[in-house]
Length: 297
Image 1: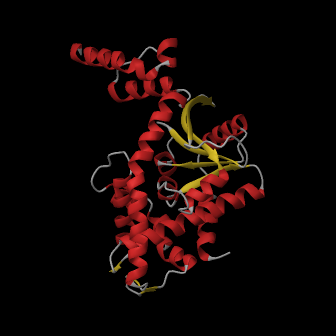
Image 2: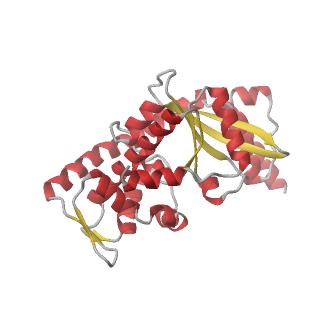
């Protein structure tokens, strides 16, 4: 076990609130999953408010060409209402995406960030998840080394990477989002870049003052940058396809949208059977109701 794998094993064992673990186990049992990863802002803050983010990973199951399959769930634990957005996919596909073997950038970009393994079926499942997360760190560090400066501290390389991955996705992030990720996850990222460089065999020099110089040649850097440009071109189209798929396969989308609207506007949305079944078609009417209610207020 190298330094990177040791870090990952330690990181995923940071357990959240018991309610989160109980919810994850319930969701995993219902889905027939082999492992459940908890990530996102609630994992960082420890709060139960808002929507919890889970990835359910299965060693067997339907092979979705466009993954992951997303669903929304509500549950009460010891009198506390919980909400979760759940992404499900095959573990081997998750591992390939983490290793950069697909056109997707979202898996390794998300899971080089902190997460907890809140439930797993057996030691084999845990081992597979650890190897996938190790691959994500190696993939991310390789791109960070090629996209970052010739000489800089760890944060300089991570900033360069996250700025690029935001551009590749069909979403808008506030300026400086990469700084907040690094600041709020300082313990996780401190030393991660060097450990991942060592694990991947990328030649580098780390000085006592914290500066790092990548010592691979110009040809290596150019080749990795070319690969990044190819992946970046696929980023937004893949995101759009996933959004279109989610509009028809997102289980519980109506309940999720109604909760979001009320949370952000204060206007309650009555969830009728038709709105539950057709959230996209119902959206204009709901938005008009919100606009009218806020004008009256």
